[in-house]
Length: 249
Image (cartoon, rainbow, N blue to C red):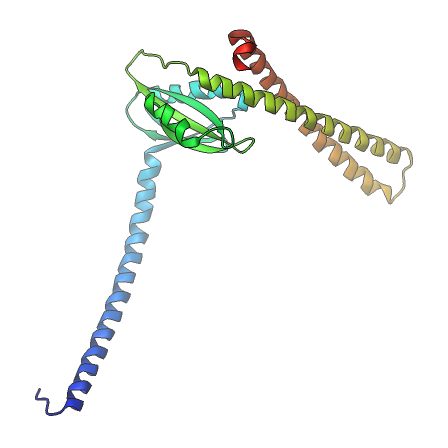
């Protein structure tokens, strides 16, 4: 094409630009469609592979059951299941080769301890942090793992016994107050229920139902917290008897 003037050159460049812009737009749309198709086909396959390489177990452990929880995770590692994460009572494991891996639950409070220094101390001792979650009193639970040769046993961590005892003491104190408040609430609602029951009327039937519901819920909460309180108190007494109270003061 022969260009004879500046205007023709500008028009020619504009046409080329428009053509390239249109082609680029078409290419972008084609790429987006291709990516969507790949996702539709690959994501289910990737999810299937991930699910096949993972195992889910459901267990209930209270704060007093840390030793039992550590033992459970250790037993799973012997079976070739490596703890990855937990969501409530659901534990997720990655499949692998059987290993003599020990787990330790560490607790620290942000205001009382340097988190980076805390993790570094464990790393220097050979423990690897594999999972963490929010805990009581603005603290954090860390799940550490230590891989050892067969038949070897993981060393005990004395510093963490101190933090556990401090946590138990705070939990027992706070739960004592909570249980007392729940019992007072239970007594008040029981009194209202008895009074309404002795003076029945059509309007008061709904009050009876509501009172009964609140009484049942409150009684359930009292029993649950009392059960946990007794378990934590037993663990606290065990620590005190085994290691001596002066070590934790």
